[in-house]
Amino acid sequence: MKITRQKHAKKHLSFYRHNFRFREPYQVLLDGTFCQAALRNKIQIKEQLPGYLMGEVQLCTTRCVMKELESLGKELYGAKLIAQRFQVRNCAHLESPISSSECLLSMIANDNPHHYFIATQDHSLGNKVRKRAGVPLIFIIQNTMVLDKPSPKSVAHVQAQQISQLVPEHQKHNLEHLKDEQGVAAGTERRGKKRKRVGGPNPLSCMKKKKKKSPEVPPTPAGSQKKRRRKKKGNSALKGVAESV
Ligand SMILES: [Zn+2]
Image (cartoon, rainbow, N blue to C red; front, side):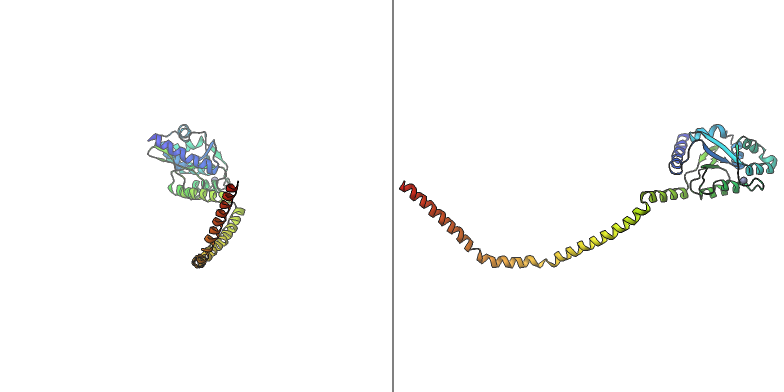
């Protein structure tokens, strides 16, 4: 099970590395729900996540996440202790903190320029993350951390990108021109074929001509006969010469 889990992670990571330029150290933004789930499942995030992602990992969070954990009190005290060990990234809500889920979504706005992973157990946040292209999602399931497979949004984004890369704008215009030309060419070919088809009766006329020629044919053998005669004559002449000699 572990091997297949790792294989899937490797496959998903290479997708983000190739298509969204993710590089080590991987920037993982964690919220309170993920820290709480890790605590419950006895998962050592800092120790286990680099091994799972097979690379250096930078664990980080935001002020808003910390503020929310502080406000939730004793129940999330352990989660808060875990989150305190992470780097606190600057968000745009220094003076007026917002909910952690909204804050994390703001951190991945504008096509996730800082290449953040989002680690959360908040299902509604997870679903919102999946609607953004190029944001890897990590959650905890059955006592283990799992890198979610690239969302349909991410896959569609990559496919659209690949198509536009394969056919640049100026080439698209060229292709259209080529198509037009080919269409015209195909039309002329068709016309040519039609002409040939129209000219179908011509062989029949040729046959008639042959029939007309056929009576003319006998004279040519006659000519050949003449030639033969000449040859014969020549031969006879030669014979005559030979005889005379
Ligand atoms: Zn914030």
